[in-house]
Image (cartoon, rainbow, N blue to C red):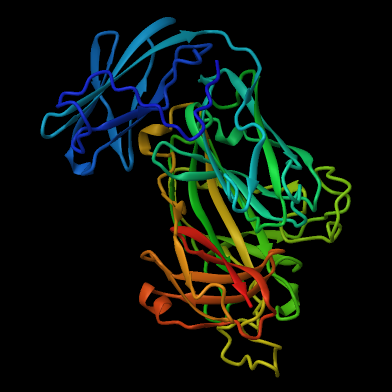
Length: 526
């Protein structure tokens, strides 16, 4: 039943009201609705049909409609997608004709024959299988794939992820180092939503499990998944992910995900000690249960880093609602014994860390928001208030060779923060755009040019147009950061002359990162 498209989007256009050949004015039409699985409903209930209709000029889309068993309905337009709430009139097969029409009259049609059944059975669905991520390989740090999943309302009470990490048959085998990683799913609005935060083990493979029931509304139909591992060339990883759908009556039929934060934030930066933006959320009165699902992993350490933060810093962060502290998050995890029973590791896997352990899925912290149902809140995440990184390049009082060895040579502390508001209800939530209203896409890939390369340590860097504040980091092949720079514009980056003449010769990696995307480039210092 399952189909794996492996980076090939199959779009079947039944009829196009234009001349043959490519026409930028003709809509491209897709839907998460699939014919590969029946729509499982123990009781006939509303089901969201999500649709994407795109054209070169998005304002050209005039109307998206659905014709179900001969009756036509208008889809509702939201930010980045369309949807229609369909309640099947009966069990059996229903023909659904989806039409996208532009203001100039061009049309695209898509037909789905959907079987609605009143039974369901537990099943394990295979998504990506034996995918190898290797820096410079076919999947260099990133992997993207298309998959088809079961579709249902009220048929499953849980979804459990079975994540297998193995040593690949490549030069170097398993990566020798613990690497930050995550698995995301693309929502109907195009927003990538993290479902698993992970840190790879030192040089061995391990198996992991995590409950993904919070993402029931996303893990349906035709979806796109992606994987990122922050690997730098000392081996790689072979990954497989299965999803275990357990048949049963769920506590709530409907759920939704709103992403409040998904970014890297400096910790203890004297120029901005509290960098996480305030997120304003409206928790609808149709919601029955709501909570904040917060994943935060701390990174950065070394002699030029105050108190080995953030990786080895025992922190207490604060969650404020409407400027009042309501929760404290103790972000420090016990790593020995390994929480996922990942044994046989090399390296310093036994040391406790900030929100993670090598060779384990990072467990999210959950904070109840149900008392705020029916109201609008200002949500703030405040870092450990007393911490300052005195060796940070933004510390005006830092003197290289005096207060710190090198004020621009530390693996400066930072947190990778992902905060999601999970809402659950007995009634549909999709009417009010509960799913992914805050689009945070960081999927842009920046092309980096370095000249000269190889270099004696003096070089310039060029990339395509940057968007927003950008961090440029220099890493060893083991993944340790040796330099970090901050730029506010393309012009500022172009005018900067990098000087790594005091860094030992060898192979290094340049990593460019901002809220829009990332880019990497290898550089050889002679």
